Image: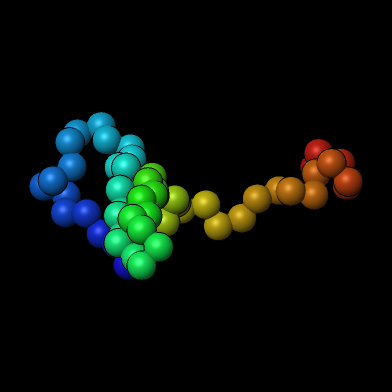
Length: 58
């Protein structure tokens, strides 16, 4: 699990780019990952009306 301390985030930041570098016997491998702020976990939506197209609007 990766977590970022709130006091290290700039206001309005919605993502962070993380660069990982590993040295192996085959050489050095580097890759960049974008960590996106996930506000969805706090979403209060618990249901939706997804069947309206099949059964009418009401």
